[in-house]
Length: 175
Ligand SMILES: Cc1cc2nc3c(=O)[nH]c(=O)nc-3n(C[C@H](O)[C@H](O)[C@H](O)COP(=O)(O)O)c2cc1C
Image (cartoon, rainbow, N blue to C red):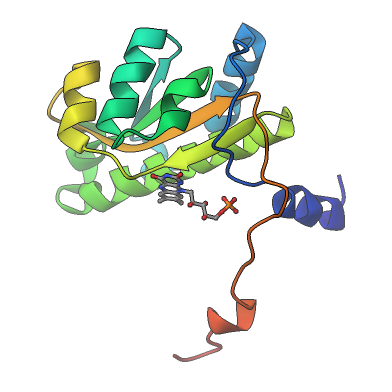
């Protein structure tokens, strides 16, 4: 893939909120996890974990915890990506809270792009009741759910979302 192919690859991804009830292949799940495993992390501590949910009842419960967003229930798999504070804080103290969050966000980004590379659809889902997710999955206290990444065979919207002009984000040399 050359650099312009890479940009096209990124531009062609979109969040998908309508899914068919087709299960994911184990290979696809393993590929997504293998890609996440290559993500950089603070101190290479990999202060993130993921709960891979394919069970329909658990997806339904997660959907309820995600403020009743139907795509969480519809998608074949939900990757619940979590920050592992104990791992990060064992080396970095308070700063480990930030690093744990960052590590989890990068891992989730890799998973989202890995799904796209497999021509699967996904939707990063952050509007959730954290305590609800914690209860459904029996997460320990030092684990914070960061995002529910719904993945499956879906129907991308006909029109891609637009973005701000990149110049609106960028400051050069000084703010
Ligand atoms: C941190 C974060 C939280 C998000 N939470 C939700 C969500 O709860 N539900 C949802 O449908 N989409 C959610 N999204 C997806 C965004 O709405 C979407 O990425 C954005 O509108 C741009 O569209 P695109 O991904 O199709 O390019 C979230 C994305 C991010 C990065």
